[in-house]
Image (cartoon, helix red, strand yellow):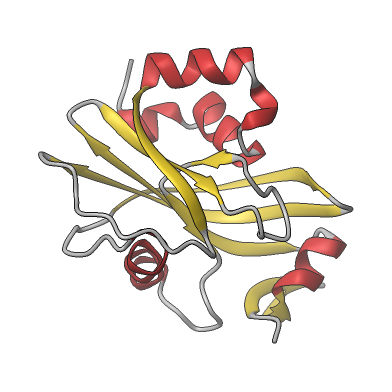
Length: 173
């Protein structure tokens, strides 16, 4: 069954199927989380079975809140569901909006609640293979260099976050 996500249709927020929202490029709610530990960010490689942007590297976790779900509650839920991460407190940083072609005739037009978690030790991980095929810790300079060299290996939204919202994620330069 297609998950119902909060989507604006003719200016009214209403539940719409996630696939429909992406195929029509409808503006919808989302969350994104970045976990940072000792100057390195945890990034994930999306599972090969994802219906858009499979196998691409993305931020720690991102999703769409269910209809009526609080964004912070959603971020905690998805950290556990995708990566097995528990016990960390996401800090809300900003609300942002972007629109990006994600291939296959689909568009992410998202209004995102952006969360960051700073931790002193790497959290225990238990990857959900339906969501994530690999993870790695990388510092900002290396991540930016990799994106510059091979942008198509990374999701459009990760490239947008680093280009336009880097200070919210990593702090001022």
